[in-house]
Amino acid sequence: MTSAAVPEPSAPRRRGRPGHDQATVLRTAVDLFNRRGYDATSMGDLAKELGLTKAAIYHHVDGKEQLLSAALNDALDELEAVVEEAIRDEGTNAHERLRSVVRRSVEVLMAHQPSVTLLLRVRGNSEVEVAALARRRRLDDQLAELVSEAAREGSLRADIPPRLVSRLLFGMVNSLVEWYHSEGSYDPATVAGAVTSLAFEGLTDRPAQRP
Image (cartoon, rainbow, N blue to C red; front, side):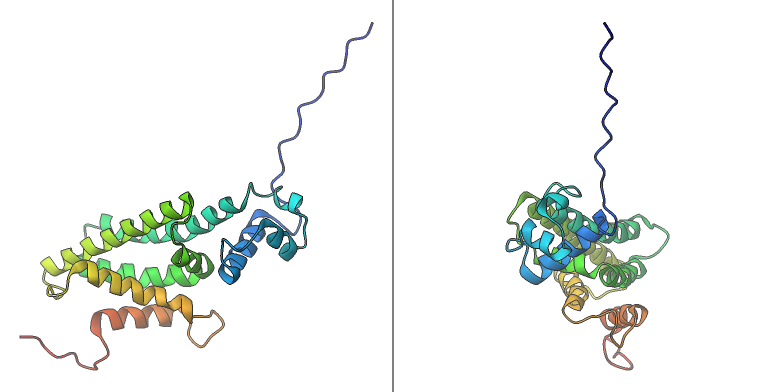
């Protein structure tokens, strides 16, 4: 009597198909979420957009929430890295670190515009969105503290609440998602420089000296 053949271990689940890897699926999903809204977009919609079956989509990802989480992480990870680096830099004054945060935040937004656009639209309707909003609030807190530090060292005016300054700065940066296009008239360096200059020097050619 011959012994039964031992089956070979099954191959690991393959993540990705030619022409439709996870990056393509994510990029397409973010575009749909921004155009239709996350809640209004189904996995069937995504499959149709990619020209695949729903079963093929699940070959790449576990579900819609995983795509949302990946997109929000794409935006938040970069923004957090910018702010954390500024906080850790003890060899530069707070004013220069704050300027760097503003400039680099603009650069992050333009490099990750679809993901940042989606981040700015979340409203806390799921655990993933609640976690993303908590991370955004932490960024606001960190930037407000950097504003306070700059005011204490005398490089920024101290008559405006730091948290209000923080929201105004990020508000100006975030407004870029409404009109900036990579194929437009302004390159990223020009936009980043203009936003930073407006935030810290204003529009006047020679800012008036305060007493």
